[in-house]
Length: 286
Image (cartoon, rainbow, N blue to C red; front, side, top):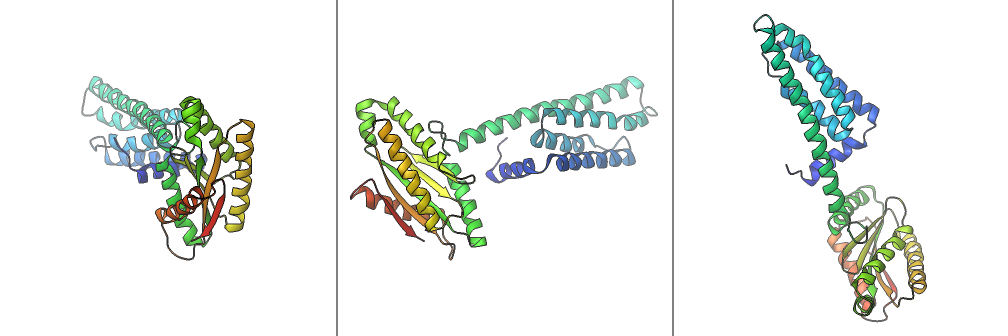
């Protein structure tokens, strides 16, 4: 079973709902199914309808709640199965009852296992395994969402493209293991300067990108300047000659744009530094 990004986002939005409201919603749905099952009689195929609240509980709550709703579905079906005693032998009715209950609990188990697999998939898809920064794919997803929100509400946002100067020397002279540890340390230093809601992504190699949500040019300059100072201090403490060429673009949200366009502007500013002085920051607006 393969879920699209949109479907995953729907699951995440359901998870974000207050648990009390979500439990009340699922309980109401199950009670509605109980009523429909009882009114239409024992021959109406309601088994698969019971699976809807069970699967919702497995995906949006936890295993315990999914088991609870499975048990409720089994118990709620007893009056309906009781009606079958007028048409079938008790042994046949009992077999059908336990078969349906088995289906409910099997789906509960499979749904919770699938949810776990999806959580693991999203974690690995959204996180760079080396630096623990966001992956390129996930950063683009979040950046697209923030860009749309920024334009809609006319809030600025700032993107910084960070390239490491002289990092190749670390890998060539000190080894790739040392280089990997240094990348992890740099990512941790950058994240320490971010506010809640900001994003750090690793585009690949020694290139990082930062999204500062609702940050105008002045706020972007303050944050990036402080971040660069902390990065240089960390490099000095670890006796590394790595420095940072940074291109920063602030989106003023006064006209439509795209993530690719903004990153291209930041990338262009970064390379302007990279090909001249290195170890500096250039700011621009879009």
